[in-house]
Image 1 (spheres, rainbow, N blue to C red):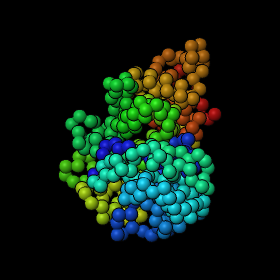
Image 2 (image 1 turned 60 degrees about the horizontal axis):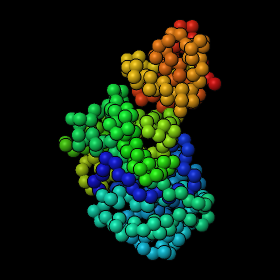
Image 3 (image 1 turned 180 degrees about the horizontal axis):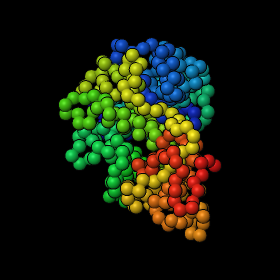
Length: 401
């Protein structure tokens, strides 16, 4: 199925509380004839520290294999069942009993994804599936789960497609979370340093226009292909590694988007494996993080780790410009919760009175408070980690809080 750069997918029914902190999961698609068994897949997920997985159906063999694993699972209600779900009062209850309650709680099913890319499905049934509020909420109260269950918008974000279709105007670094001057949104005046954040904020803005200002959005698919057709600009292993690796670091560092800085995101990478039986362009068969042999297509982290032994510090990149440093400094001292008292006028680290020095102190405070976790020294590409104590006048940078 052809994908959109961003598509809002209607409903994500959370049976358990949505994660407050930034969280990474992975899509486990199975349109292939050479994949490992479900039990081997569960072992792979656990070995990689991946504790969230999203399915496109509710296959019994997969759900049984996930039993007792501790992995949180999102099951999918396929598009072909949406019409029945909307039109038959007893359908929701029966489907949930057979596909959710029968496996829960030993299999930790935390959500139901209702449909997948329904607006671009060639058999689009949205006019029949979502005609009234009553037909949308039949899954909301599910026996045996905490009440009330939450209906959360979910969407697929694909900066790759936006870049591939307009590579002359969209910088590759902007699409891959790499250092770039940023783009100012003409509508809200905010500067964006990643296309992903801009796409997510477009959804937040749309939800705000509908008076849903405090609702969470789950990104149920995002990824970058490691191989593509000749006209699929940017599809390569290095770019896929850069996009997914930088995305993981960005999500696990905490924090939201320029429009919603406090809105931590839950994101599901697409996909676990290359799937050799998918239709469409070459890229469709090459989104996998792993080959069917369970070997990595490229090496990226999936969970916070400290890549250094001994003490490390986070400091500002002086060459990114004062404007970017100032913006990141304000975030660190504000929503980021860094201890910025020592860089106030007259305090111990006020001098040297430069944006770079003050930003370095604030970035390091944030980094240390986050236990030097991977991705916590990023700030849109304005910071980096050092293994020697920073020198800014007589100021001493802490190594822990």
